[in-house]
Length: 96
Image (cartoon, rainbow, N blue to C red; front, side):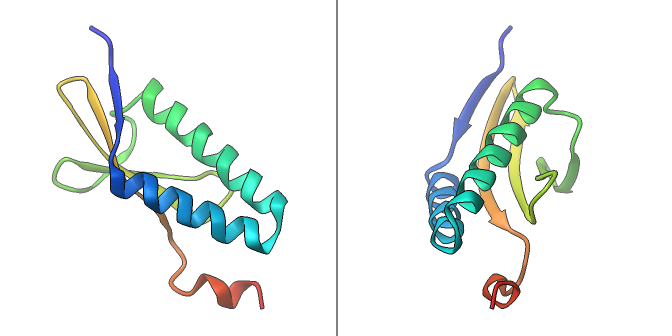
């Protein structure tokens, strides 16, 4: 049985907003964020039960090189990406 991957609308919008924010700072940061996102999605897909629970049925995957994370559910061989989040409380303060 194969695993299915779904990305919620909320997660997709959050990804695009964070990508836009990093790209406005510097194009290389946008590329780095996008690369880290793809890498993290691949790692989740390869081993969806590896990551820590942060709430009932919700797991967290931290990006290896950036302060971001993916929250997802894994049930019945389906991975549902719920949210992509920058983990800094006030990210603009880190760049100015």
